[in-house]
Image (tube, rainbow, N blue to C red):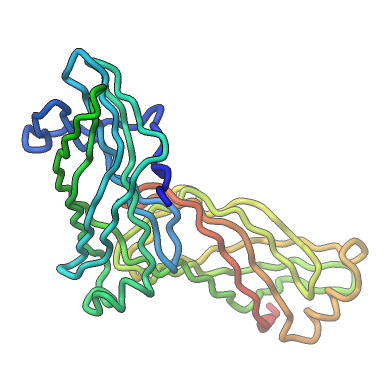
Length: 280
């Protein structure tokens, strides 16, 4: 069964200036406008090539099918041929943007190209063609060749440090909760912000935002102090008991908004552990 083109016409994208080598002059001119990484996770990502198609004729043309072969680090990764249920019409002397997506699953990639696994990034080469019809059903395939790099992403790690108790009584506590954010990737990132929730022995005790505008080196880490003023009449005696008889069950969860060389992403964070309490 034919598949509908997964790339919808894109309303607006940041336009990257294409060199003359990016353009192939036929009845339709093709130019690479953008390369975008999305759906980033430790399991994989999607790499999309955004291609502008310009109809240079005075009559409409229709994109009816496309094919492309993907090679990553000299290993064949994908060979795709797709016919469109509904051809895309390109008006005379007009252009249209489409995305050619490559879904990359690291598990499959590491089987196809074992040498990629220890690397921090890899290069993707896409070659293929777009086939157009004119109003008389005459077809012409226009070739294209595109390339882009993408990250081998290993996530972000959270580690909970011992809780520092400046003051701890049956009525309340003055604490410092410390979380370490580690970047196991080989590339640096910018942490625009981290939104978080904290719980002790299953009781939510705090939520907020930290790490705004913080840089995080590749394979580096940052420690964040979160001050806590607790009222045990509000949180319950169970929290006092947990702090008084450590290790105490602690959970840090939230989301990091990060900037990377491949764009901005929202990364889920979660860590549960039993930690010591250091009384001052």
